[in-house]
Length: 239
Image (cartoon, rainbow, N blue to C red; front, side, top):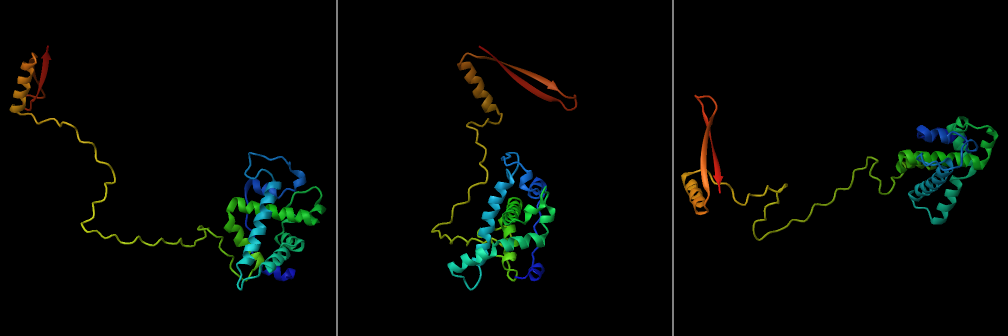
């Protein structure tokens, strides 16, 4: 595809943020190769490795989803052509990514392996921050600008309605169905609820105390104003 035609069909470049963006826009010759456990990605070497795998998989899946279906041999050939050094270099130039790279020797960015490393790193950064479907929406349009990018299998975060499970089959009862269990268990019932005060209860109480040799003394006390007194009776027992 000619550069002018490719520029007109170029999809927007997904943005990346934060420390990840700073590392991607810094040439690896200026960064440590040690893995930094305090970052999400560790280093750009790891990021490029991840991005390379994601890019390869999404390119072939976009071709795989085309109709009519391509034979396996054609899938392999078209994937290799799509990921050629020329296409990678053209994408970097059209997106202006080379101009954003901090580098002591800018001539190294013209090397195919350096251009591929930069593009793979960017793909890995988008995947890390925004997920697989976001990368698919971008790469799918690079592969085939005339078609909507395919939906990543199993992805439900791209405004696609989730499949509604079928309702359970009706259950038939020979008798009325049992009531549904309560949402919360009822409080336990006391083993012996206290009876309401009455003469019968007091008589039984006094009789029981006499049988056991207990002396019971009743002490009434009045509280409150004289016009609205409140009486409390204390029961004091002695052996």
